[in-house]
Image (cartoon, rainbow, N blue to C red; front, top):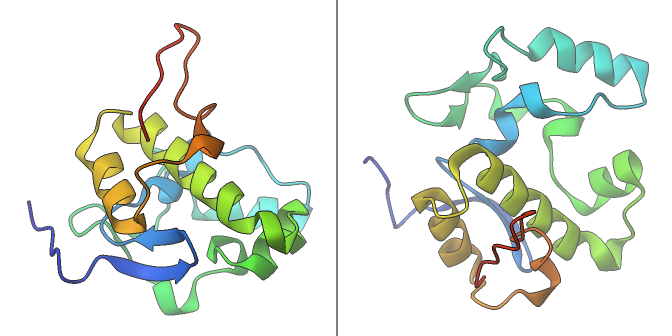
Length: 143
């Protein structure tokens, strides 16, 4: 499947990790528009007709502009604080939850992508994410 188990991460902050060959956050069609009109306009311009970011390479599942990507594409303590008001001490939990939810929504909660994310991030017991892995049918995941 092209997955290189020796080179799994783009970035890591504590228990949050940006996993290579994922791209769940690059599906912009499901994103709520941000409050900032300039960011909303840039996001709209970057979204292709199929909902994916125009800069997402579906073959490699990588960003073609990774080094120069916009600030809202950079998951960090500072970006989450400025964009979403997330305090530094909550960053890891919120970012992990956002990744798991995006991966689950896009690829499925039983997907190899979510399994790889949990393995890469080192999370086998994340009780703070129980709500992410629950559905209306009360289906829960052992994360």
